[in-house]
Image 1: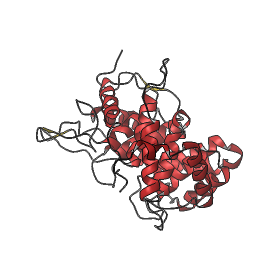
Image 2: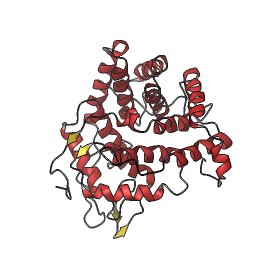
Image 3: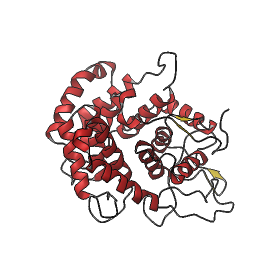
Length: 327
């Protein structure tokens, strides 16, 4: 666990972000392929995020190694399994597509044509995967007929896999696909009235569910640079701003930083949030509690702020596709 014991100001000042990033770039280049924890088997999510991080820090050889590793694990149907094998689940296909696309954008001379072939096959697979509709009646507070992506085939659509699939489609030039448009509708529909998002539901048997940081942040990243934005997302941004002042796991913090940077993307006034302190606090916890490359890579991405490849998408417009759109 990387939730904190409280750190003193002196301890936090021990973290020099520039020095830490130099160390982490060396670490990533030396041992790029890994799992969720040291010594574990390679898994698609950590490998894909490592590839995206390598792109963020101009580590071309490292990014190439990681992207080729995923390509070799890609199945005939275009999917990339969580375990980098032929067995599902396959929600990690979305992250692999983003990594291949970012590698292509950064080093087209190294990526063509295999990267484009890989992410196009990945998108073709994603287009075929559908969350199951549910006859909700009065049981659920969201539109159970909207179709996104499930964690596991044959189950209902959930926020995080839907957000990742939408990110992949926007990164890879498929923002106008009907599945991307419906994903936007679904994420809009699943925001809680007071802000934030649960993992997939809003109300169950009349009871409003609690928001959670990670799915909330991923929703905001998925709709980065979409205009106009439904007002429901404004409440989610306020929820994340409040949560930033509370202890937060490194993975959730990394996605939250991306979300809050996105929320101020077009601001003409100076950035008004203090992100350095929580970022250094998370780095310090990992330094003192455990070495975890998966988490370290996510914090490296967050440290890139506006330059993070996760935010490198073109503006999109889904006019009138969700209720509560600001004029």
